[in-house]
Length: 407
Image 1: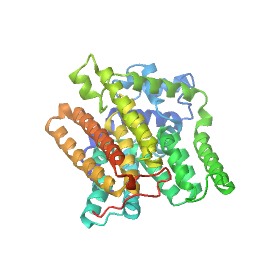
Image 2 (image 1 turned 30 degrees about the vertical axis):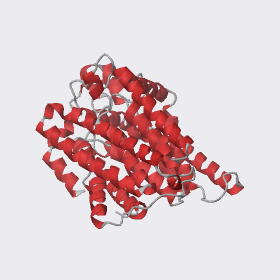
Image 3 (image 1 turned 120 degrees about the vertical axis):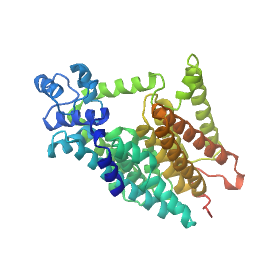
């Protein structure tokens, strides 16, 4: 927490960045009792909020429609989160940043707990490096969280929390966190099957009545923990979701998308490159699953990475990192050796991309896109290694067999 607060103190101007201005706009709508998704709700107040000097950004505030679109561009729980912050101090950029890094610090604690309890890393130096690099001093989260104000660390916290407590058989807590992770940024849906798989008892048939009851209860609680945040804003919220999804998928590669390099090298053929990459990634997973080389852990990780890091074309690294950090942390719980390898790659590449971004500031986002591409390649290499393993190391669908690292 101290390191993150220090970075905030050293970068006061970042409190006026575009993203945090958008978050504060959304928070003001909620704290004023306005439905963010209904652009006709209290038009006069909306106009006043746009034209005041609070959370002002030239691009976002240029016209009312643009301001309305951006202010309502997040899911309900995100907007309610901003509204809760705003209720303490209206559009206080420093308060927003402190709250964001508080949850990043909690995430660091959770990652440390997962590594210590489930990664089975016997080498002390590796443990220190992984806990420090993936959690406490995570180079991506320090930049896209503390320096650049972002709240994606909370999304990762909710997802990994749901996974962790599912493994701990804490049904209620896991279900609530899972539902919240869907209502916050939507991405918790991709680990829902894995959490359900973990909450059920090993060695007991799926068709056992106790298993069925437990599974149904978990699903119902998760759905309830998600829908409760959506209900006040239905059906308008669905229009926003559809618009944002189509815009991100149909966009040319920008910011930290993995296809930025392909777009730069072959601007007329980048779509072909993207489609070929998607097909190859999907085929590798399908064949590996069919051959029972991967189970629920890797299937869920692949689904998350496919959507967040391969299909979306307009995300900055804060969003891409939701996929990367969740996947790295989860992999280590089942395949410690692969977790150590890809975890160290994540840390090293994260540091290098940050340093290169400082050396050539104009290419900082391009460096982030190369980081994203390298992480996708590294994850694909893990899949291929699992696929090529000897038959005696085959990981069955219940994934009760996995090797422990002797690192």
